[in-house]
Image 1 (spheres, rainbow, N blue to C red):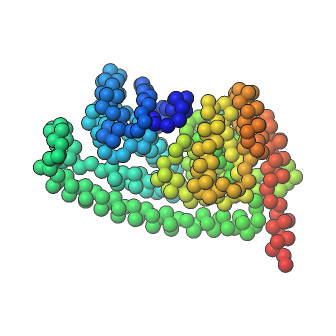
Image 2 (image 1 turned 120 degrees about the horizontal axis):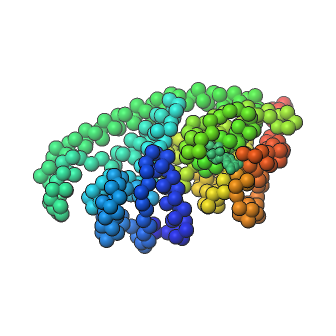
Image 3 (image 1 turned 90 degrees about the vertical axis):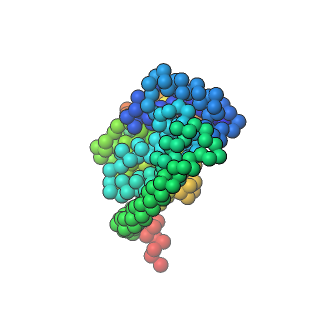
Length: 364
Ligand code: GDP
């Protein structure tokens, strides 16, 4: 890693390990390295890359996951040293999204994001074989075998672009149905509340508490991919819709922000955001920052926000106190024990627009 503190790097690495486990991998070992600048050839630099090669050999690992976004050439350079598959954070996250997408639209969007990610990373067989055989063929690198390799890559690229265009058309065709639904909700002036927050923060549990909906709760990152919209009521009987959205992660790949834009529009379009934060997490402030970054990306930064500080039953009281002081509009709850839920219901009630006021505006 090249910026931030060691603690931040370790938190990020711990999250990466959790992500890899969510994807079904067993995590064997980890190393942290500090550099001023990533090495252009191998990302880690040749000394550290060799150290990693020894770790790979000793543990029998079949994959290396790097907690950064690698340039295609860095990934190849590192693979050539460690001799096993190298994937970066983005590749891993895309993989998990692919495993978890349920709806037709969600699946199409993930596939589109994967293809977009893959396009600049294609590697022809000719090229890779000549590199391995010739070692440092330097300037003449792969020239002999470049012909067939390049042709194959070009063909693959064209196929991928065609597929991407088709997916984009399909996604565009699915959009009107959702938009109609959303417009109908608007027309009926039902206020909408979006639950957003870091993955595993307790969004589904909170949705269940607020609606008794019986949504699946899983202790896995990304249990939620497609938005779920439910009806709920304030204590004084005002109906509103509550939508649970995709779980955020640190440095959500840009391909996914793009791909999930329409899903995230649920957030951008809501009257109120319940920003759920796991108070028992080692780095809740980092999570808040990461989520707000996504809010900014989707133009949702000006929507009223309640910070729902969840899992207070498991959190350090000192951390809870600190967050209460640093953030405005905090409600402390436990979706597990129900603590703080009455206050949250009241706060939602105070924060959503009243249907009457909307009607007043419409009547001349
Ligand atoms: P989501 O990914 O944000 O939708 O999170 P979930 O609602 O699926 O919850 C993730 C995990 O945190 C599950 O194992 C929940 O049981 C657990 N969890 C949720 N709320 C609380 C809480 O208030 N206290 C504790 N201790 N655990 C919670």
